[in-house]
Length: 130
Image (cartoon, rainbow, N blue to C red; front, top):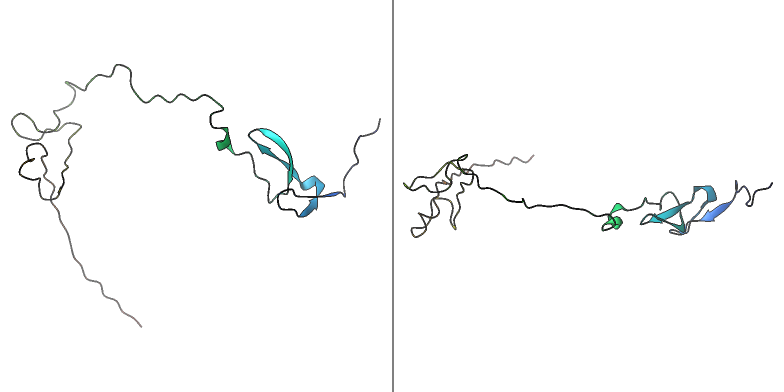
């Protein structure tokens, strides 16, 4: 029984991407979205199948919300300003404002307590050229 095709040991072909001549056995078929195409590419032009083209092919479930969440009571200290006017030590203590360094404005001081203090330093630079 004979083979249907010739050996092709010395056959050459052209890359369908760049058009240069290569040995036929060095050319490989491109694969696009898991489908093999009849486009022959040289080793420089050949790229593996791109996984990003398979987006939406497989179902993905990525839930981000919790079912029946519960507040963190009796386990954390009070957050924000307490009833006596001090700042609590809770998990959601933040300091913010329109001008955060140096304290908040007078009208929103009770709502946005701010104890940030700005500190800076100005140094000198000496450049010597030779």
